[in-house]
Amino acid sequence: MGVVFWKELADHFSSRRFMILLAIIVLTGVWAIYASGQSIRQEAEGIPTDFVFLLLLTSQSGGLLSLATFIGLLGPLVGIMLGFDAISGEYARGTLSRVLSQPIYRDSLINGKFLAGLATVAILWASILLLVIGLGITLVGFPPNAEELWRMLIFTLVGIFYVGFWLALALLFSLLFQRTVTAALGSLALWLFLAIFAPLIAQVVAGFIVPSPSTAEELTRQADIASIISRISPSTLFGESVNILLNPTARLLGIALPEQTQGILLTPLALGQSLLLILPQVTTLFALVAVCFGISYIKFMRSEIRA
Image 1 (cartoon, rainbow, N blue to C red):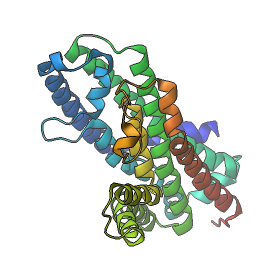
Image 2: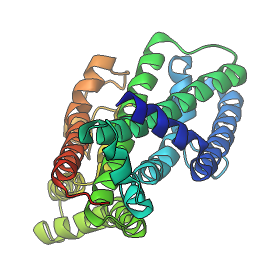
Image 3: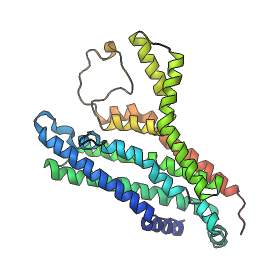
Image 4: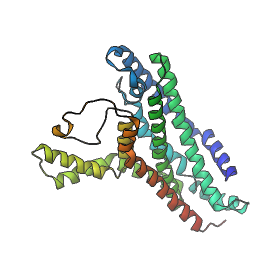
């Protein structure tokens, strides 16, 4: 497995498509961080200094999306790009039977490919985190505190799970279709459906269940139903996790009635309390990665491979 892992890792970092996508993410990320840092410096008097580095990830400035939102949109493309031809490309080139004729077991091959893709994703997220810290220190003039570092590290871990799901899904499609173009189109189609159409469908279904809400309770119930349905999308799970992690004052994942928030001080939550709020979302993301890769593993171990 180690041989396959290092070979695949070298292929990923020498791939032109990966370098192009990496350059897009890094350049856009640098611009977003720079614009957010300049905005924070101009409004330094009205911004608490406890969580300035978290604002670099979440604030929108210069007509750009926040860095966390931008990564959430482009992260699936990285996972799909790393996995859609992992097996189908070997089928197309006719090299799969040659590789397995060597003293390499099937499980070592698929495990090495998946772990190499996951390591590439981890290196990419870690690089973005270091970029945020380095540029942030340059722009604001002081380093992040311990809680900011922990929150950003956990944000990186959640992002790895999130992109890892799309990597495992693309690997599964690569096995099911055995054609590179079909696997890529299927992965992209599912990504567009879950990211764009799933929230719209959730709103429509919630409108059927609670039609024409006239009171605050009915409006809240409709929003809760739409939120629950939209959680079939990993993008929603990732967005909710990021909102709680990078915004310490956030206490709810949906709409709250005025009587529910009456008397609550808008003080930052402790890290442990924020983690309790997003524990279902993070657990679900991890479970989705495990299920997709488990199905891919079983499919590959039972498939017939001919020269």
